Image 1 (cartoon, rainbow over the protein chains, first blue to last red):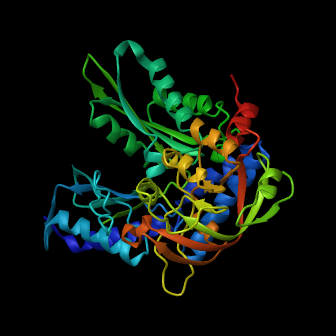
Image 2 (cartoon, helix red, strand yellow; image 1 turned 120 degrees about the horizontal axis):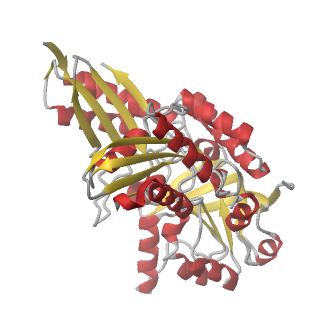
Length: 279
Length: 185
């Protein structure tokens, strides 16, 4: 059995959350360049050019891409043949987030839900752990902005609603958000599971790189159909009107109860920041 | 797109009259940041008949909570947050003379009506471009409500901040006009 000190996980999270906030993934830059080629509106093109310029300034001058440096969302895939040593895993994750937000000059954006008092160090993070085969740990950092999260939702549809019901729910969500979640957006859709699983599927769908289609041809087609429909809405970059409202759509599914059709829509802004590392 | 219009704070009625939906503007001068928590506190002060930390007349509020300023820098990343969360509080501030707001996203009918009534203007800054926008900031310091941390009121000196007019005093709305042009039914 391989031993791994949890301090390594702390260090990885520190690095990943800082890097994520200063540098967009390469595939997101490609997505934005493609959007620039596809956009017809003049103001929309200006917006995408500025977004690309922003990414460049952020990387070269070390200024966070967005002032909303997010709720620190951590995905951990832990190989079952690993023995974690050196301390408590949860404390190690919190410490990684704490260090990243302090050393990286990232904004502490978390507060008590009722008193609204800021927690001061951007903890607690949201942690999703999964035990997988093997003896490695995959760590993914997704600093998720509040602006796009505010336009995400889970709804339990009925089996009779079917694919049409899913499509109209997604379109309703994108239309409701309009300019607010900072389009061009990426849409993660979770279909199936139950009340708590569908949103997690949707969030995990956001981790799929731009342009990567679902392996299931039916779902791959559905991703493309929804993307086309969304881009007919005319919302466009920053909501000023245009062809590119969404850059991509990713779907993740799992079986659900025969009585229900849970669907979650997770909206991500154009500052789609995600970084990962395998330990 | 037309030429950029250069304007300065404080905003006068003469300047506001000239601005129309979709105009591309460079704003310079002094502005104040305020987001959710600061707005709530401003409204509490107004309701209790207490003095506000700054005179609203002719001023511009920027819906923004910047990242911490690293040593040797002027500001951190400082793009706009979603304006609609401030809608509940905005008409009261406009009634006291606030003339401009900078943010991103749609406003409520109540805010749009108040923009007409009090002859104010709503500008959009590019959301998710806090690094780019930080280049227009000449100086930044906490001005009021320091205990609110990132939600404190900062006073910013800005030079040529690139903005678009979203809601003008003639009832126009850039989001509604833009979507009409590109929507395919």
